[in-house]
Amino acid sequence: MQLNHLLTAAISLVVMGYLCYQALPKKNSLHKVNQKKAKILLKHLQHRNYDHAYVFGILRNTNPFVFEELLLLCFKKKGYKIKTNHAYTGDGGIDGTFFDKQGNKFLIQAKRYKNTITPQHVKEFGLVVKRQGAAGGFFIHTGRTGFKSYENLTTNIRFISGKKLLNLLGLVQVSSMTDCT
Figure: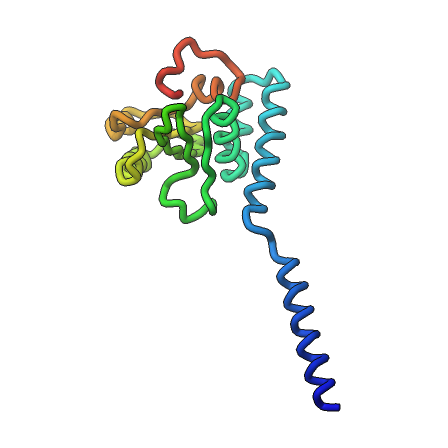
């Protein structure tokens, strides 16, 4: 009789453990949700004729992880191979990675600034790009780029903001995109 109770308890524990495991969020489920939101946002922006200032307002108020996924989606649509991080936080200053047709690795730093960007962030990103041995990096932001940020810019880092960001999103055409893709 006591053996039956132990066996029943053991089976109950196994079943409860399995059910708890099934209830846990699956790996990268947050990425999938944010990727879906980024696709919806991009479609929304591309199918409306919003004033550019309004678009930047939308981007500045977008969830930062959706903003990262939005940028990666845009690079993917341009034909680049992208690599998403395993997690959004603790990424060492890398918000995304893409590879050009030659296999060169480029890192992305995404910032939703309302005002002027922080020169220290630019400097730190330059060090991350160097440490990672990447061919270059793109500091993509919604703010203004001040003179001090340009002073911290290394030769293999490019800014994408303003009309270049709108171009990346497919909202305007810029005559020369050599600085960003």
